[in-house]
Structure formats: C-alpha cells, structure tokens
Amino acid sequence: MAHIIKILDGFSFIPRKELTLLEALEQQDVVVEYQCREGFCGSCQVNLIDGEVVYTTEPIAFVPEGKVLTCCCQPDSDLTIEIPGGCKVKAKGR
Ligand code: FES
Image (cartoon, rainbow, N blue to C red; front, side):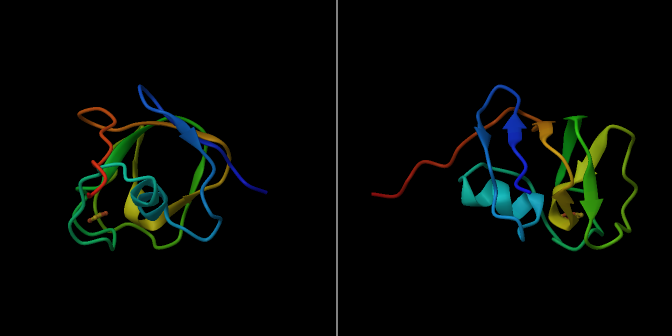
C-alpha cells in the first residue's frame, strides 16, 4: 500500500514504493543533507513527527530518538517528517 509522506512546512506526496526516504525526497527535488548514503555518517537525519519507518539497512550511526536516517529507511506507514533547516526545494534547471 502506498504511504503518504508529509513534510512539515512543505507538502505531501506519495513516493514510489521501492525508494528509500532519501531517494523519495530527492525525486521531489527536496534538499536533504547526506554523505555516505549507507547509514554510517548520520548526516541524512530528519525529525520523524509521526509514523513508522522500516530500515532497509540497519544504521551504524547513532540515531537519536525522534529522528530517522533517510538514506536507509522506507516508510512503513503514512509519515510526517520535519527537515532540519526547513523544506527547501531545488530550483529547476533552465
Ligand atoms: S547519508 Fe550517511 S547515514 Fe544517511
């Protein structure tokens, strides 16, 4: 079943099922910090306000309570997330 991702101060969308949360946000041109994309560095954290995720790769980085690592998880329910620094969308190239 498709889940809805709601970005606080942003918008809602339904991602393709097989994408990680990071990939799903990137597909919407949402700017999210990342480095390793493998659960090591912790830089891709967002605040999980509501909902459940399932980790596709168990994160190595410490994940503080209330945060999720977007590079290695997928939605397991409808989600509400908050992106540190706010929801910024990349300008489309001309
Ligand atoms: S990008 Fe490094 S933990 Fe997600």
